[in-house]
Amino acid sequence: MLSTFSAVAWAAGGASSAGARSLASKTTTRTTGSPQRYFGAAARIDQISSEPGLAELFLRQCTCITPEIHLKWDALEWEEGRFSFEPADDLVRFAVKHGMSVRGHTLLWDQSTPRWAKKRLKRERDWSLIKRHFDIVLGRYADHVSEWDVINEPVGDDGSDGGFRRNTFFEAFGPSYVERALRTARERAPRARLAINDYGFDYDNPVEEKRRTNFLKMIETLRRADVPIDSVGVQAHLDLSKGPLNQRIVENFLNDLAGLGLDIAITELDVKERDLRAPIPVRDARVAAEVQSYLEVALAQPAVRGVITWGLSDRHSWLQDQMPGGRPKKLEKLNRGLPFDAELRPKPLHGAILAALQPDAPAGALALRAR
Ligand code: G3I
Image 1 (cartoon, rainbow, N blue to C red):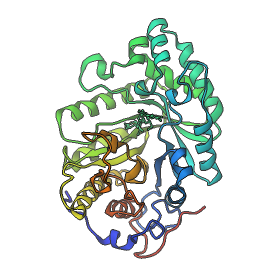
Image 2: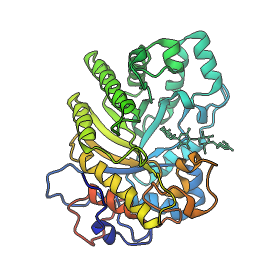
Image 3: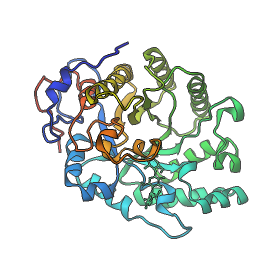
Image 4: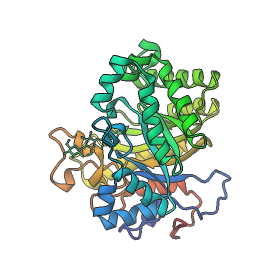
């Protein structure tokens, strides 16, 4: 296992966002025979439209975006029947205009289900509410969203309830809600790729071991019943307090998933730091080393089609809101778990992702994204 980050790729990366090589090159010639992967990031239209530098960064770095919040049920319909499509429309339009694909995140997630819908689902146990939601969202975005996280985070932490998380949908419909959701989505969006997306599969501890087992069992059952599912999303929110990664565990898990005949996407990659008091170069090297170690095995698995980070800049990372005491005011106190810092400068993590995605890119060459 690699414990330190090799600075080679980072040195070739440049120190300003404008000079940073694109992570999403389509132009690199492959000599290794490995498949070309996409690179993308989670995005918010309010941030993109108010920060030209950030918009430029997305255009330069990504061939794919995931709306971080705008497509969630509570973002679209906070109050029953009152829809707010504008942010999602604008972000999807931005992506389409610039030739980026969109990952639809997410149709069903307990945490982003509006309160009114949770209440109704628990009381009425009526699938027509789910169907209505899918009809509206898939109907509006089907032409522009190539892949959907139909269900987000259905996996439980222990062996109870058949390995399912006991969420609103499970309580209303039992475990069959997963299968029903996929079938309902397929009816409404026959051309889209359908996925289940989940977290907590990366580390060598009993909870994550159980989660891997539960997830594999869930997917295997769906495959056996011929349920429409095309891919799985592995979030990969890495966490240095749980590490270092055991590469063998990641490798075996992805192998097992691939063996079930599905594509895999790394959908929410970022790193939560453990020691924020260390000097910044040390912190950045630790973060980059963890991702280098992860991607080394993940991208050796041909079923892994691409990598998406959960944001591009530390300034916007959800992890800042998870800090004890809330989002830090000083830039140097921010978690540094994304490829660009708060001022949009590329970090060693950018170099680590670049080296993993484009191993045969000629050193020093600018590998620009084809627009
Ligand atoms: O926009 C409102 C703002 O008007 C209000 O003042 C503020 C007060 O709390 O809330 C703002 O909304 C927040 C929104 O992010 C935008 O910042 C929501 O409260 C907050 O819940 C929401 O958090 C998002 C979370 O999912 C829930 O939707 C995070 O940004 C987003 O990064 C996170 O993403 C999830 C993935 O979907 C699934 N996997 C885990 C990942 C991290 O939790």
